Length: 228
Image 1: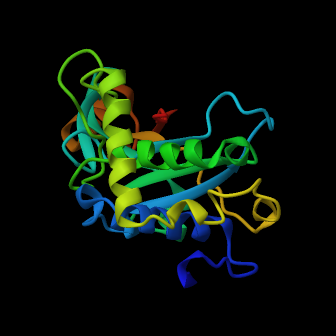
Image 2: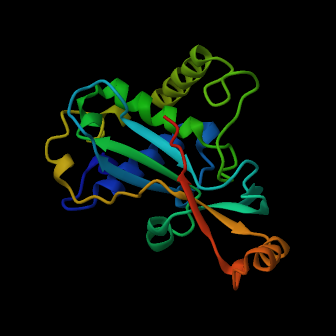
């Protein structure tokens, strides 16, 4: 039972990271996951009521795992990328940000907390390349249908129970979270999308608009959208 002890004053982020690691070890499909690619974030929920969002995941790479994707802005060709100063500073190797909202997360039952964690892990691409798992059809990220997605999550939960029956006794899953919500924590802000003009497009802009060193400019776009 050594794994279940919660050392005092260890950041809540690390407690969640340990639990995610244990869950991944207990499910064959996730056993190869490198937790260094997941930045675990803890954010304050707006309320303590049970309903709403308890956790979400944000990819830090574009479809296919690329750092950048081609695009056009204001008629100029260039590249979009995700930018997160928090990740660059604290976990530069991360490909995802997985955020838990507390104390709302602790208002769930142990079973619901367990399901929430498995649900979010299942969103990650099988190779952890930085984008999300995709399905054919209308339900791209909760497919093939939401009911089938939920059923697969439940099957993973049963596999985890068979492998590690003690897991639901983990402090993050059992009890009301008293004391845990007061541990130090780190919040990773949702990354921004930044546009970098291509070299020849930037030179064209310089000729047309007289913008010096336009190739070095980056334009901040809207933030990436989290997936719940």
